[in-house]
Image (cartoon, rainbow, N blue to C red; front, side, top):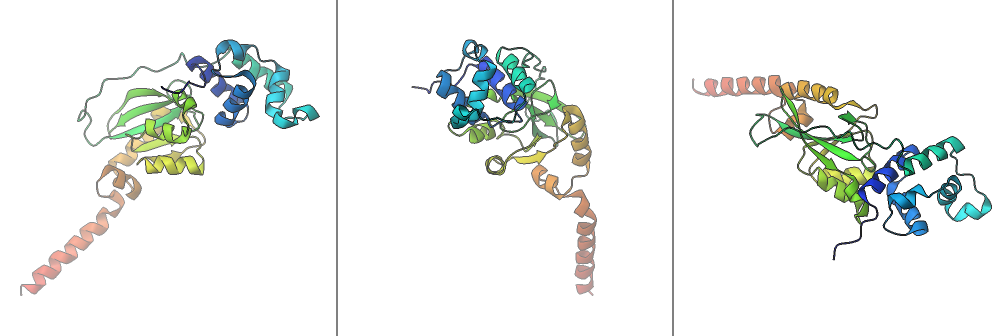
Length: 250
């Protein structure tokens, strides 16, 4: 029997938005705290019934009885309550994808981007709503899939589950990622690239395309081609070898 999901997809989306609003609170810990209080599965109805005082007690944890200050202002707590009710929650802005068949884009690599809105690089590995999957060549960038990252809420190892979602990619762009999570991404064969400032995905990919034309060593390894920055040294070594071979003939 498959495990019971921790939350419906819509509830998971609201919780993810709330966690981001709470200074990127650890989602797994947040879900566990909500589940301890309201039970599983977490539904939109249950989330909509949470009050500011309830939220303050959840964040205070075992110190709630001591009237503990949670370090988050009243306005921020109220904003989270509105998210729990579904107000201002993203999710209806999924970008359209394009068809792709292997070999369509010669010299291309597959790139994932952690995202929460439209075609934006604006996600953290552990809390983003989705991964945008692009096939990128020096001359084209095609969005071929949008993968739901919220489905990992019920996973025993959420970082491993998220890494598996992008395991067919060579590069993963994100705003931030913790050390243990990064290790699992690397173990899946994916190169994580942190870009804290984020930005439009197409702009990020345009810069990558410039590198694809003359790849530095780290990118050349991913592409399986010689590094452009080392080409002049390779030509010099080849010239020297040819000179040495010619000299031995006379």
